[in-house]
Length: 396
Image 1 (cartoon, one colour):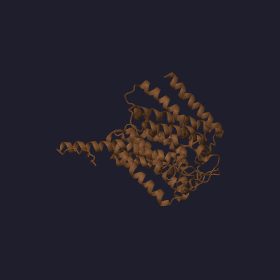
Image 2: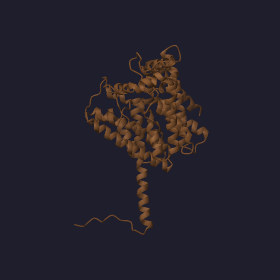
Image 3: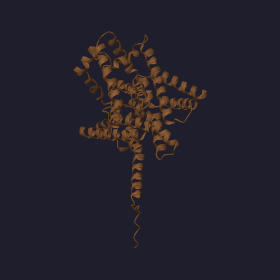
């Protein structure tokens, strides 16, 4: 346990130092300016920063810590500490859900190991080097879904995450599709409460956002040097018609939410959390590399299934770890700033996140298909219908 804790602490210190010393901290600068604007009663949507503040008004309160300290680097260090604390808590919840039979000491040891690896992965590194909110949103979502389906009121945390950034709304859709209406309502109430609180405390921010500031996100995300790892992003990258990306995203949303509902109804809470978050990444208009911290529950799920020697788990985990440790964005840009399609395999390498996400959802659905096939065969046997045997090959 002590060695595992030392490993986790070392990983946290190293990645924090690397991020704050070499990272651009571009979002920390924006969040710091937005927080100061809100504290002064002004709108955060008229900042003189390199990029604008593009989040809903409630997000300005979530990033108030960015205003702490006399400098951006001190603020970034504080924010990195908060983000890694959120990652540690998230990892604990996921490990406890994946291996409930472990005692507290074994859970802590495994949590430290998984946390240390998570610190080294590309999405975590980008979140910390930019000063992004991804790890905080992941914690709110996983914490809010803890104790499901009995502890319904905790999902207000999922609603709070959706008020900070709209993507977690897909989780509320999954809850509703699974018939967990009380949980979905508490989540919606959390989002609405956060928005109303923002309207009361910072009316200028809400007025500007509803008046058109929400379009800033569309303008920023249209930049040509963005690695957009979503189905819409891949379609645009390949020069396909806009309706193609929308159709793919809508199909992924319907399929992913349906899969999530079936897994939750089956009682596999971790699998449902993993699939709904990957669905959100694929169906979102924009999923940058750092957004893929939301795929961490999927990695824990695959690791759990690897212990049970489930087919395909080893390949999925190996590809994910290799891609996230090496760094897709470094390989894909190849010293440039703008992506250019360069053949099937090059494009697959550049957008492997999307390919992996689609493969993961298909892999997660396999047990449901196998179970339904088995149930159909058992039903046929119960009704007295003979099992069909393969037709023997005809002789020449």
